[in-house]
Length: 51
Image (cartoon, rainbow, N blue to C red):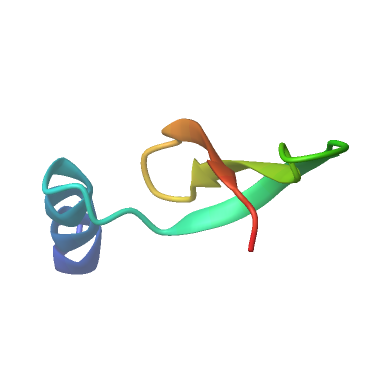
């Protein structure tokens, strides 16, 4: 494992992920759009409200 990989994993442990959008779900009314995002380094997946 090289140094940039180690730094990236350390940043993920601190909660500083490098997210990419995997899926977008559209809703009606006040719900709006919801994005499902995944970290490119550690594969952590979560959802968030889209802007």
